[in-house]
Length: 87
Image 1: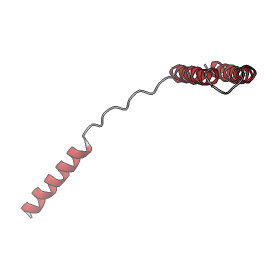
Image 2 (image 1 turned 135 degrees about the vertical axis):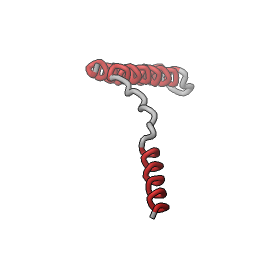
Image 3 (image 1 turned 90 degrees about the vertical axis):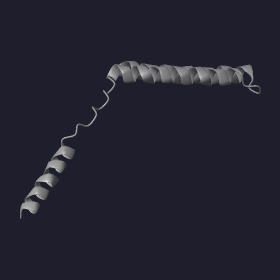
């Protein structure tokens, strides 16, 4: 009986010790403005790469490049306006 009591206390003590261990704190969530700013930077980066690809395309004519840039600018402005409205 004495061995059962001691082993029970030992098991309970170890289980409580395991349950009482602290977990590392969660990383802080970015604020809404930080998320919007990150999306703005990503949008700018994507816009610049697409613009370079259009301008450096070897087979596109000047008219084709102008039309593609106009469509790209229109899409970029609408996405930028949408992101500004979220701020």
